[in-house]
Image (cartoon, rainbow, N blue to C red; front, top):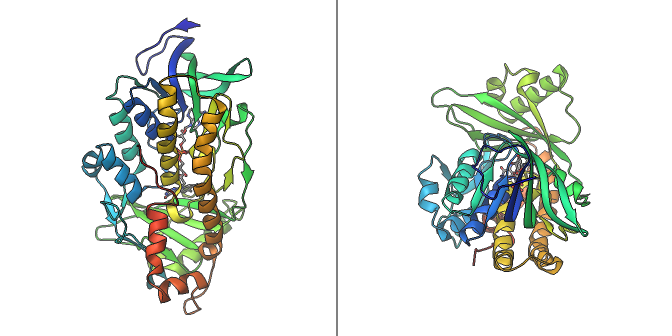
Length: 407
Ligand SMILES: Cc1cc2nc3c(=O)[nH]c(=O)nc-3n(C[C@H](O)[C@H](O)[C@H](O)COP(=O)(O)OP(=O)(O)OC[C@H]3O[C@@H](n4cnc5c(N)ncnc54)[C@H](O)[C@@H]3O)c2cc1C
C-alpha cells in the first residue's frame, strides 16, 4: 500500500491508503451531515460515495422543519433558502376530490414552520459544499466500499475501489451510512430484522404543461404523491407489496386506479409505457445492534424506513447529529470503545421504534381503496373531525419523536 494522507479528491494512484479520524460510507443525508458536523469540530473526516454525483431520484425531497432548525443552528439556513425550493405549511390529502389536512406545521416551536421541498441532489450538494470549507473534510466520489479491515478482532478501516484503483481507508471509527442495502453492514456481520412492509412504490414522471397542478397527496384507490419538479411532475404511487410485475396488464390496472383517484391524473398518464414506471421496493427493517467494535451503523443502514409520513431523511439526519455530538469529542482524543457506540444506539433506538411503529400503522390507510362516495377510512375521519390532532401529526412529521441539536 502507498501511504497518502491527503490525496486530491477525485484522482487516486493505484492502491491508495488514507488515514483519517472517521471514515463514513455513503454520501446520503446521514453520511454528509455527519461528515459536515465532525469536520466542523476540527476532525479529519473521509466520506466515501459510490456515485459520481447526487443526481438520484429515489429518495424524497422533504426537508423537515427540525432539519431547517438545525441548518439555522450551524449557519446554513440562508444558503439553503437561496436554493430553489417550495414551502408547505400543511400536508393535505385529496380523497376523491375532498381535501383534508393530515399534518399542520403552523404551530411548531421552530423558526420555520414549514416542510420544504428541495430536490435531494440540491440539498446534498449544499451539505457537501459546506463541509468542503473545512480543511479536514474529504469526499471521495465514484468510490465503492465493499469490505472492512480487521485487526485483533476490531474493525480499523474499509476497502473498496475508486476510479483509479483500489483504496483502503484506516480510521479510528468506521460509520456505515450507506443505506438499506449496505454491503459493509453485511461484511461487519450485522443483519437487520424485518418489520412487515406491506407496500411498494411505483415511480414515474407525469408530463407537465403550463398552469398544470396536481394535489400533493391524492388517495381513494391506493395513494399517489405528486411532486412538482418545474418541468415535469414526479409521481409515487403506493401499491400492495409484490403486486407489480411490469406487464402491460399491470400498467393498465395502474392507469385505471390513477383514473379513479383523479380523472386528470388518469388522462395525464395515459401514454405511459411499462419502461416509464420504476418499481421501488419498500423495506421496514432495523438492526438489533447498530455497532460492532470499530463500526457504527446510522440512518437507513441501521433502520430502513418506509416512505410513509416522509420522515426517513429527518431520522437519518438526527442520527448523524446525535453521533457527531456523542462521538466527536471522543474521536478527538481516542479510539471510541464499544460503550461509546452503544450510547448512540441508546439515544436513537427509541425514536426509530416509535416511528417505524407509526409507519406500520399507516400502511392500511395508505393502501386502502374505495369508490367515490364510500366512507373515509377511520384514521382520516378522526383527523377531519378533530382538527387539533393535525397539530400532533404536524409535530410528529415536522420534528420527529426526538429532535437532536449539535450541542
Ligand atoms: C420509495 C421511497 C421514497 C421515499 N421518500 C421519502 C420522502 O419523501 N421523505 C423522507 O424523509 N424519506 C423518504 N424515504 C426514506 C428515505 O429515502 C431514507 O430514509 C433516507 O434516504 C435515508 O438516508 P441515509 O443517508 O441513511 O441513506 P441513503 O439516502 O440511502 O444514502 C446512502 C448513500 O450511500 C451510498 N452507498 C451505498 N452503498 C455504498 C457503498 N458500498 N460504498 C459507497 N457508497 C455507498 C448511496 O449511493 C447513497 O448515496 C423514501 C424511501 C423510499 C424507499
